Image 1 (spheres, rainbow over the protein chains, first blue to last red):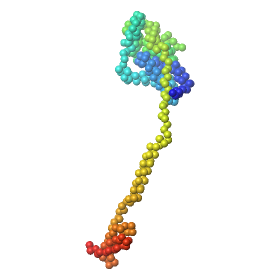
Image 2 (image 1 turned 120 degrees about the horizontal axis):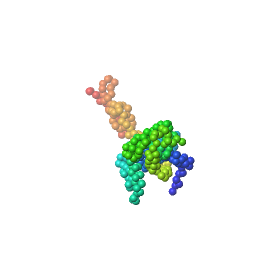
Image 3 (image 1 turned 180 degrees about the vertical axis):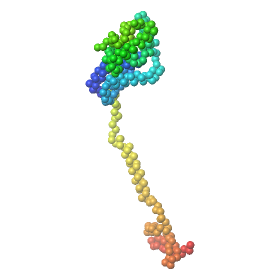
Image 4 (image 1 turned 120 degrees about the vertical axis):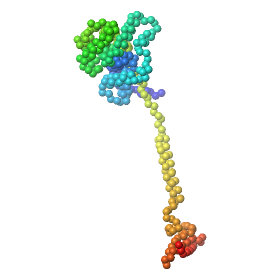
Length: 181
Length: 136
């Protein structure tokens, strides 16, 4: 059996560092599009895989982060056209009850019900609103980090986030889920 | 670091909403975060290198076939010469020494009359000439 060709070490390490730095934000952008953590993971890994192949083929990418975000957004949009999306599986909230055979604690059931309602309301928001909410609450990014990813200035981040929260709060209040001042 | 939750531009603070959003999104983020799985490097299978003869053999065979056809054409052309136009009874350019066939020519007598000349080689290599007046 022939020995497998070894990849150059620094490139491998560089790629791992890149994955460590940017994989969460790539995931967050895709997640915000579809509100599906598994699909977001698949697409995130596909984007990194494409970057890896690009590197292997000797392609020069000046800004890997921007490249990854762009590819991930495109893949997320393409997902809408894919057979998997059209034929689909059950929506995540309908699968909440099949997580295990053991009866779930009451608190967990309540939380899942709340999350199901919240997900339904989030799905009604525009994708940019979901993006900013995911980055803020999912990854706990601050304004400058969000501004960097979305390529807007921090003031716009505050405004967008405020409006997104406001729109969501109005919907949730109408559902009787939260009481806003 | 900018605290978005307490920022004045952030809008009305709602611990309830913030808490709900935070716990929802945190639950969605994969934990533990998956490590990058590098794809197996693609090992290109090299086909065994063919010998030079095997690589150029087919081309040589084609070239030899074309050369053979060309030489055959030239050889057959030399064995069976092409019929020359104008060659015939009246052409007058036949090599009678190599041909025993009689040759009939239309000639004019010194007095200006038309005549037919028959030239014939005999088996002893003597040439027999015969003439007739042509009244046509």
